[in-house]
Length: 490
Ligand code: FE
Image (tube, rainbow, N blue to C red):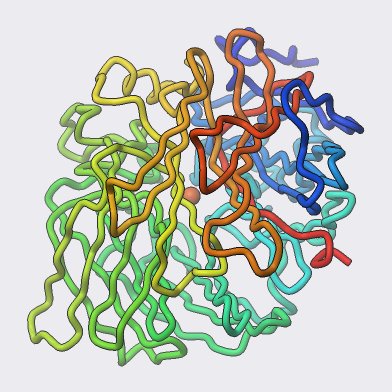
């Protein structure tokens, strides 16, 4: 019998695998009071490896997906977490050991699992048309029961309508029509440049499909969606099948390649696609996008080079943390112009990631955003962020801002030895103004090896937490989540 050992891992870090499926009813409130008008579930997912990898220096993006919720009922908060039962999870559970090899490289797998989906459902939870999805962008979503977190379908293809092999971790919902705008990159398999574009109606049925080819194969992590257009964001974190055959990383940073923005009218055909080209940059996440008919603005986190330090540069150049620092920038495409470029301008002078908006303003002009603030400029801290085992406490603040008025920004710092997870906005009732409501965030107490859920006033961070809810266990702060009101769950 193989001994179960996680190499170099003594379980004393916030980012170590937890391997625990939990039900904790009535979480303890250690500060303030949970507002009784928050009713619904805060879903999130974290990578949480079940079996030690047989790959040296494996990366956390290759860990099993652990879905979880914080359920709010009139001031009470319950917690549940469950592994997503992917085909990969089931196969390894049966074997009692890891069978799947390196991140996105099926050539390194145990021969017994040839052809089995490598999906991990470990990047985001997303809710649309009454369905809760857990997604990793290299495979199809897993469909989960929103009440129990049981896995209903580990390879959900929307009733056979999605033929792409992959599905984005960052779809968007049009708040006016209820449509979901989505895509899959590497849609024909590993390192292919094909992108499948889908629009789904408010009931979750695919109503539009278009296939396009990117200028090069690489990571297409997010998409800009406006009322009239979609913008595919191609940045040079490239992939080549040959690299897999040589047992190299799936992605590599290519400093010699341009950024391409592919603009397609909503429900457009491939022949309507127009490419715009810009200088080498990395793009993390879209904050929001909107258009006025002629100009398209895409606001998101941008750096000179990808902060995913485990994907090396093809020229071997070392990663300077300053180059990997992300700031919110606005990229503007002028459709009336004949040239194929776009402009870029920094919106906010403080570095950050995991940007979020009030979802009622997705695809529309907006005045409120939130993100995690990065403790910079301090290269040492940046280096610490680059090592997940170190505790990720470079993200230790939350910032809210008006993208058109940088002076409006407010910052809440979680304090020393704290790491903060992606902020989740919850509107204060249906008639709330933009950004009027709460921000929920998991906060790792790195010195106590456990996690709090913090509730902030989304319009007034200076108040400090309205409530702090204590978990007796630790959670990884990385990973994305979503909020679902109780009436949406009914
Ligand atoms: Fe993401």
